[in-house]
Length: 163
Image (cartoon, rainbow, N blue to C red; front, side, top):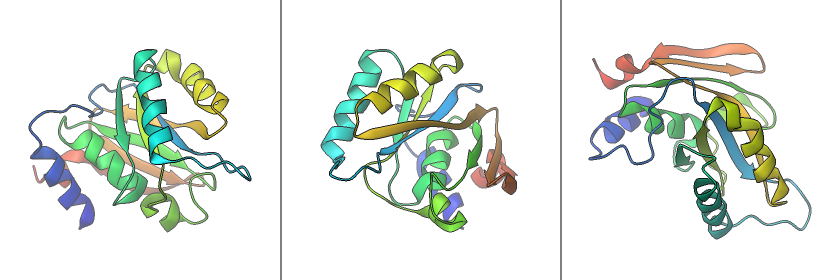
């Protein structure tokens, strides 16, 4: 299973630099704004993440690449043994598979304090190039994904980690 491989890769990392380590933090999806004539590049995303860190909005970040949102979530949580509880819908993809596994460029997940997620999302939205949407929370090890309100993934990180 691809998620087990992602969890194993994350566990092998030397330091949890960007990992989601604190249960209760809010997970915000940052993705390009769907506006005509607006192009969000990888450089623009990097600059935005730097600004969010400088303003102390984010506690951790994970770029979305190979493996889509679900891969990024597992990678961000696996080393610390935390998990996630997220709700996805048509803003994240046109289908369940696209929302979970889609590898659209210029996207990232950020974890922020629960009291700062609205400010974080507003800051992201004001760039005009990206949108920020709270999609869930970091958990103490449970993994839950909802698509359009229906639970489609429910397990625990220890299962993926093989322990």
